[in-house]
Image (cartoon, rainbow, N blue to C red; front, side):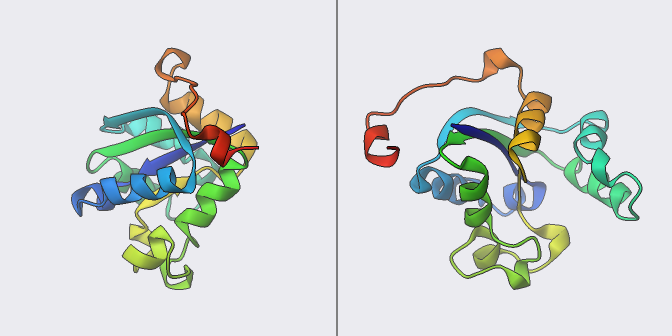
Length: 149
């Protein structure tokens, strides 16, 4: 089982899309193991986006993610990274397929609604940045045997 971090970003929260986005991950079969509504601190935002620190858009990313509350979710499942990213859609919303979160609800890269970890390693790091282990609950749904082999 892999874990991925999902951030329902400020634009999605402000537009009232939190439930719809969460629904899509659950319907896909991914299991919520941690979730919280929070205001991201500047320190945490800079840590999360550190890979982009030298890029010209770094300051804008930090300003944006700290501008309004977000919902952070740790999801678990078989191939969770790939499944979540396919559900999210391409980074540039105009290139995202219809039926994906970004393809259905976003227009601009700077307001692309949701973040998802891009690798197993980053999933582990990002989940640990936003959750302490005691905030995560591995569990089994009654339907898991119909989702996972």
